[in-house]
Length: 318
Image 1: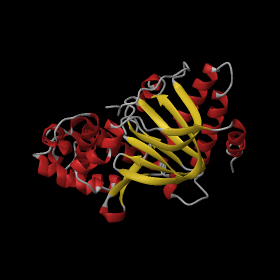
Image 2: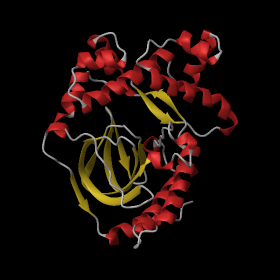
Image 3: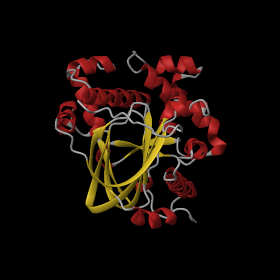
């Protein structure tokens, strides 16, 4: 089983940046690494866990650590910039990085983009050019990575959930509302708590007691701040962990259901379909070829003469 991909970094800044043309990159996961995928030309279909989106030129998508993902090229030609970094290596500089979850859903936003997305495009373009220099300038790369992380933490870690087609809820970026900073910090703390304790018999009453709030107020607050109810957040968290285990282990659906906190296999199946529009068995079957088949990555290097004008176009943004 080759689901977990280990990244080797040649830079002491613990990052790497590449540009390539992708036809197919099978499902995989990075345990401690974050990947930003930036489409410079053409189209790319990305599978983030059981959900998928179409990216076009200018779009950026963030795959967080432990996000199962797959990349599929659309058409005959695309040029993709991918930046990967080792998250633990930067936690000493950014104490809030450990639990940060980044969201960039530019694919759902009509142009012109908000200024912070142009800033992110510019930052990725500059890092790529710096990464191509010989000898490798590690100190400059580390400084640029800190700039990138400050931007991600400042503008791309605020999110909520929104109902989409078929009633399935998806995560969407929330613009940084500085005046409401304290208001939203509580919901991310609650989500972090659920992510740590989803195996427990966690209840809204227990959470309200720990937050020194009434049950009714906390219930309203969670729904308003996250777009989901407490029980929905708990169910989604358990299903996301079940999805990861379906991919990285040979454990039965019954064993996984029990491990993530569901009463039984049937309960897991009902909730899993609710979030991912398929059963656990269907999901495991859909990624079987990537897990058990021969290596099937299809990508081609790109001539730097093709890359250069695309990169420089993002260095002078509005």
